[in-house]
Length: 218
Ligand code: AP5
Image 1: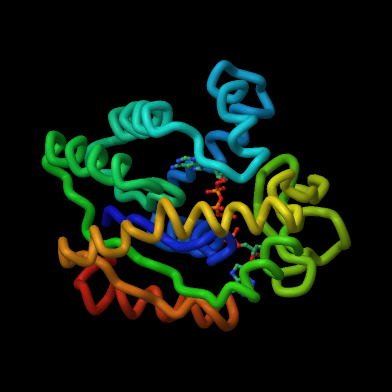
Image 2 (image 1 turned 180 degrees about the vertical axis):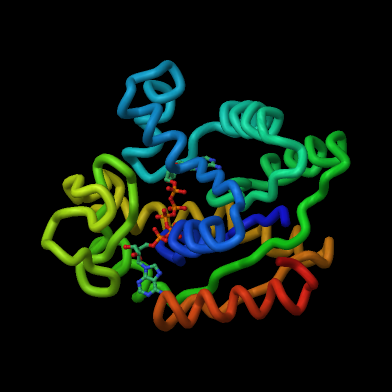
């Protein structure tokens, strides 16, 4: 199963990708996680990406395409995966199609998670992630058992730099301008499914599984 998860910041892509990957032994490829790791290690990629990420903008296409090309090249050919956060622009989508055409391993399905804007802001400003294992929580909707501590590894829960309200609003604008047009692109290819991303995490996961089932995936 080779999937792309699309949706605005806070739509639940990462949360659902994590669950699906655990359930079906898929590889979760999150460009946001890869970039944040690079920023924290101060690698050349991280140093280049930081200024764009801090403002809620996008890292340049050539950097992102190179990164994904390498990541997919190093994947076992029979590994299924979920792309979370890539592609995000039309040039990225076109480059990905070309890479996968060369590998003769096209994307099976693109899932778009649709959530009202007011919910997105609340989800993002309340998000916390573990500083060690990076697991994602929410202060109200998906709280850890012990305040500020990760259930899995006892790491400390921190807020992402770009989850402050002003940056969140910019990220939502960037999504509308740069990423939302991809819905049309994948709809034309007839591989797009739209899912209602509102409601509980369990409810959304059920909808996701139904969509995959009805497309003979899993
Ligand atoms: P990235 O990390 O990909 O951020 P994003 O797309 O903005 O997505 P998020 O991680 O914010 O949201 P999500 O949909 O995964 O939601 P989550 O599941 O965490 O990218 C960060 C930055 O990196 C970008 O701004 C850009 O600068 C750069 N970048 C990355 N990829 C790039 C690319 N391809 N090209 C250029 N630049 C790139 O959920 C959010 C919160 O809500 C959590 O707290 C969660 O617990 C909670 N939640 C989830 N589901 C529910 C639910 N159903 N009900 C209630 N709460 C829920």
